[in-house]
Image (spheres, rainbow, N blue to C red):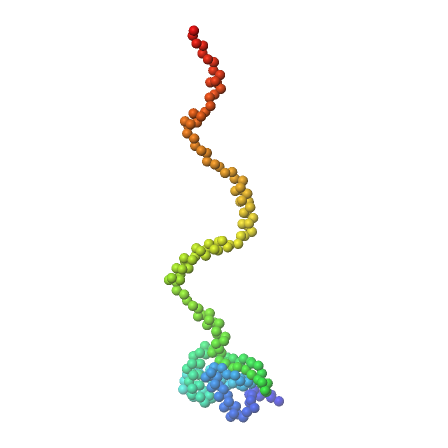
Length: 214
């Protein structure tokens, strides 16, 4: 029975377990991600996260304390110079465990343990959105766009779809146009020509002849 036994010995002696966790913690700090079994990843998380918290206070005492656990000068230097600045505003939870498929052979549960702030897969979308190409206004490109604008507008107008309202009104407009009489210009004739061409009245023809004196 395992009542009250919170530490997983991982089937190793105390000295072997500490040496293994120190080596894995140094590898995690140097490479930011390692692949191991799920049980070892959970044990490593409990081992390395207090050291990352300790690195936030860059003092000689903190460096000596962390070095007593890691046993690697290069890992201690990277932890205090680079990682400590990266996780300065994070109040914990510096690592993430991602499960993988079971290992062939012994069917052991495999996983990836990584530092949260160094995962480029989850931060790739944000960086791509922030790094947008900026184009300057003006120049030959903008002038070419302005020159092509009327042609594009004409094509849009010609290809614009006819709405239902326009289709309903169009026959009525055509009927009104067809029923409107066309007014022709009246030719102007001179007054003199009109008087000359006017026919003689009947009264002048029926006037009696005056008698002549014998």
